[in-house]
Amino acid sequence: MMNPAQQLKQHVLSLHAQATTLFDDLRAGSVDATHRGVTRDTYGRGEQFGHQLVEQYALKLGLEIKHDHMRNTYMVWPGLDREAPAIVIGSHLDSVLGGGNYDGAAGVMAGLIAVQAMQQAGLKLNCDVVVMGIRAEESIWFQVSYVGSRGALGTLPASALQLRRIDTGLTLEQHLREAGGDPDAVATGVAYLNKTNVKAFLELHIEQAPSLALTGYALAIGTGVPGHFRFPRVKITGEYGHVGLGRRFRHDAALAAADLSVAFDALWQQWESSGRLMACTFGEFHTNPARHGMTIVPGEFQFSLDVRAYDDADVAELEQSLLTIVAQIEKKRGVNFDFGVRASAKVAKADATITQQLRDCATHLGMDACDLPSPASHDSAAFCAAGVPFGFIFIRNPNGSHHPDEEMSIDDFLQGTAVMAQWLATQADKL
Ligand SMILES: [Zn+2]
Image (cartoon, rainbow, N blue to C red; front, side):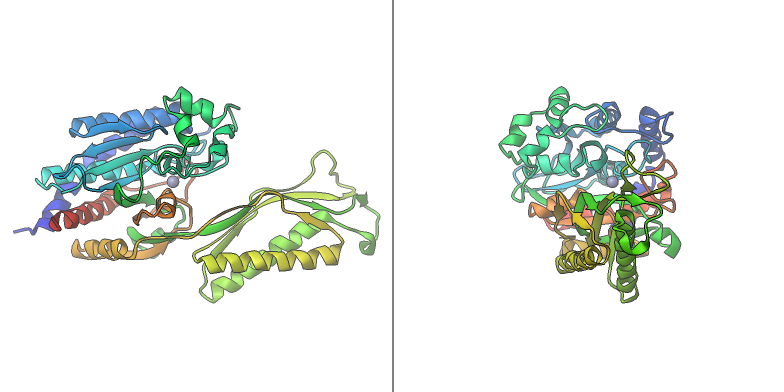
């Protein structure tokens, strides 16, 4: 006879067709013929479709539907004690332009399937289990991330309301109002969710790099989300010159940027070989198109920089290294770096207890799961910053993310969802 954990796992695995249909319907409703892949634009038609789809599914499961001032969707499976702090399971339903179907959405579907399996197994928790469809996680639309989750947690600065969506030109306030939300609640810092009414947050997400696929693990337990510092627009000023200018007379802004990128990449290699985790990305990197030319020594250069690591002390050390390297380049090339606006986020470590429980659940179900520090940023970090403990499950994806080739097998998804359901069941044991 099967033990209760194996029975619950079987209930999850039996929902293969339902999970497949959910993802297929989501893709069909947000497919983007122009950019390939899907587009679920933040506070736009695509994202809205995702919210309606999961809401309809949740209604069939008998869940209560609620929305907050950000128009996040809450699908509530009532517990025995409605006053007890809830367990929230979720992720975001928006995507980048022409993105993949699973980034974000898998975390919402996992919550629904886990709840459905628990219902079938006749289990019930003391507290509410809330499946949350989160708005506006992708920073491409408003140039800031975690808009929906930070808004729900009361930690989104009021100034964010005036940010404009890059394609529509409308402000977040306008988009939010149009979607039926309440920007005034953002301005006054209303916390619909907080560390008192949420006991734990659980997020399942596809991996956005191929490391699991390469090592053969179907899933991993996430140990944390990196902290970072970012400079969206760094300007280097040198001196424009004629192509015939001798090397010693030049103040080449492009070579100064090249020096920095090569130096930082070398630093990354050093860190990697000594087992320290970091990443740096020069996402924008260009001369001034109004003035550059084949026969002109570049006098201006602009780039963006994102540097991330898994320990706040490491992030600080990297920023110090940046300053040291830049000072050397400025001296060597006679140029000036203006870093402009700086943004940063603290490292968000997954809760040690929940992480161990998730590992134990995977082992108990006979699944191999490794630990994985997240390479990317996730809504979990916003919950962590608000004092809510979180746990994280990764599903392998061989093709990377934020493009149409992103991939996830439903079998792998159900394995991760089974771990999530088993973790919920262990919470039920503690009644
Ligand atoms: Zn995501």
